[in-house]
Amino acid sequence: MSGTTTTGRSTWRNWAGNVTARPVAEVSPASTEELADAVRKAAEDGLKVKAVGTGHSFTATAATDGVLIRPDLLTGIREIDRTAMTVTVEAGTPLKRLNAALAREGLSLTNMGDIMEQTVAGATSTGTHGTGRDSASIAAQIRALELVTADGSVLTCSEKENPDVFAAARIGLGALGVVTAITLAVEPVFLLTAREEPMAFDKVTAEFDALFAENEHFEFYWFPHTGNCNTKRNNRSAGPAAPPGQISGWIEDELLSNGVFQLACSLGRVVPASIPAIAKISSRALSARTYTDIPYKVFTSPRRVQFVEMEYALPREAAVGALREVKAMIERSPLRVSFPVEVRTAPADDIALSTASGRETAYIAVHLYRGTPYQSYFTAVERIMTAHGGRPHWGKVHTRDAEYFAGVYPRFREFTALRDRLDPERLFGNDYLRRVLGD
Image (cartoon, rainbow, N blue to C red):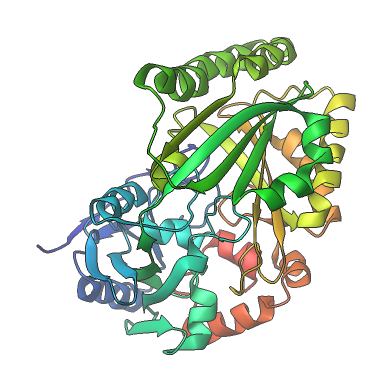
């Protein structure tokens, strides 16, 4: 199989539709060698290069007017090493295909985010994470990666090989090169029991530390304009598997979380005044449920209602105070917020630009329905988050720049120095990277 190249300006759009780009050419390489050739050729032609995943980022991380590399043909598992307990996978493999393939082999990732539409490289390069007391983001599970750099050479990076590159490139924002393959730690497949339960805002926030400490994976959603939350605790289980019933699972995951929610959001966009009443009804519609299944069926769920999102990582001890500030801000403002606010956690990790780099972390994510003006809400939330030294998710809406990041990431200069060495001509640059990393 060989790759394809198309020239002429077709428009690329991300999933949320808030970012578009018109590249000069699109390339779909079928191998690392073809990708390296495409990088060299673009450099000769004086064109920028960006690799794109499935477009699940809300930022312009992957946007380019040069050569857009699509990873559609760089998919599949290269190797499963049962001695090292790793899987090496091509960068363009969608997480949902990786999860299903690992399950067939009796294996699983330790932790993952709540959607699995993204490519492996797209998810890790932007710091995609789930929630976990002890287990961190997908990037923190990387054991090695293969990277095509600006001169077209192929670097293999791990703790032993090019360790300085490995320390940064696991969350590299596409700024250091194009990731072509990733080796991830895996473990024998296990069962998780999920316990979903409505809980009052005051109770969740008062007991947050205990709920975090008692559960391997704890998260909750607060419904603005109400005092209601929905909590989710995922813990390892000896079994047996007891997945949600087909009908009850469909009601919760499809009808309430996607179908009715889509209608509620559509109505809220047309009649913003109806949002508080809808929020009270929808936050009460959720009932407690418990089910047990293999990890990816518990961690992930379909997200068909399109939205725009901003998420900030805070020191974990600051999260409850910041969330209470967000609640107070919404209550005294004319804002009408139809989407729940999501709170998750992560342990500290050792990746230079990880949102959890060097500190125990809690995440606060705010969303608005696609097509709803979001600037005033996100700006007000961002003001609260930055006052707590928050770090925005690299793939979600934010207004921060390199000067700000240099202050909240102790290893920021380590990353930019490595970028200067690997891509001095900024072959992989674009406007977004210029803003967040500087020139």
